[in-house]
Length: 497
Image 1 (cartoon, rainbow, N blue to C red):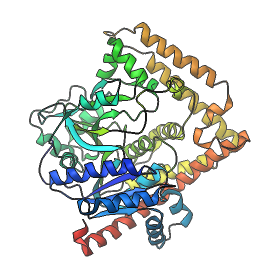
Image 2 (cartoon, rainbow, N blue to C red; image 1 turned 180 degrees about the horizontal axis):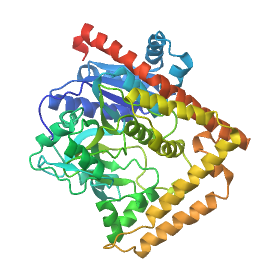
Image 3 (tube, rainbow, N blue to C red; image 1 turned 180 degrees about the vertical axis):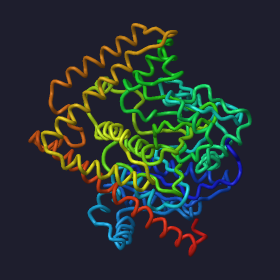
Image 4 (tube, rainbow, N blue to C red; image 1 turned 120 degrees about the vertical axis):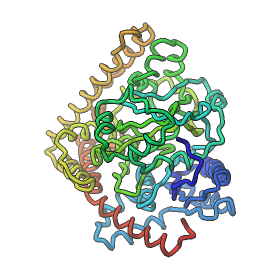
């Protein structure tokens, strides 16, 4: 499935902020890969820097002929874009809220708008475009359910993780491009052998049986290096082969609970409708409406995936048997006080994911635009709810989420009984959670913790939900306007695409 043909990836967008040296390394690896692939898509650098804008621009200038079409999108370019979009009567405050360089979600929104109508590969600036794989791609397709079918290995150091990843001559752009936007039936017909549906969920099996008009909207590369996971205790929630591995291999478990360093990759092209997203190297079929990203806070990619699954029930997510190197600035070992961090704090993304899950059974039929607007209005209503009602709802959401997590952590399988080391980790998580829950601030998202008055923190949380809801309601008009602008741009400047 990793076709070496012409890639339909028209744009590559790199999100960056205040890391010029890291960005330069990533861009040089990327442009070198362009040379190998003989395909030069439009390249955008979305710069959310607060203090190093000049240095980032210097990086782009130094690239010179290696990236002649590289576009710098900083505050001025974003302001010009917002002014153009405002002519469609989109309120200035809505545009400023979600389309100003800064947090990674807002940077991703700018990338989505600037590439509306195309297929785009989004990369973080600490990704090194050195493809790797498990070996020969057999060209098969696996249909997955809600368990992780990727191969995982845990390592003590980044050097060990990246050296264990066997480099590949495969074309990263073509691998994403071969799948993005493709109908389910077309992907299955490309498989070199009958698709493996043994572990597909009933929903996906029904899609295959009925010839549903599902298509791949998102694609993911594998990863070697920093796992991009902020709390190792979350690995106690993993399902599939990796859970079996951790239940039976004490050394792997020890590394999983202490080190960021992994490699994980799909053994073959894997299709699922499970919307779990990590955007470090993520392809988007942005030729049709996709949701916006949460402009503020972390784990914005998971919220994006959950919204896409609600807005487009026919959306499929593809995992490639090809990986990249993720070489971040973080140290390999998790600090001891952060190993149960998810039991010590609440994030906006967790609250949003809970609310989206609660909305799922009642979302009306309709187009992606109509469903997104409906979601936005529900979030606005939550942001306008009475303060006490809202505080009670948030508390309930946090308690329900953590109870679910503990139940999953404590579950096991018939052929893999819970070992003592796993039980000890679950107990440590439970104790940390019980201690955290004694303090009211635990129930307020960390992004809204500033200020002295406790009640003000819930007000800030409600303000966020209301503003994000408004942005979601306006997003289809923003995206559709941007697509028209981009079509005009490509027609008048074909050499720039």
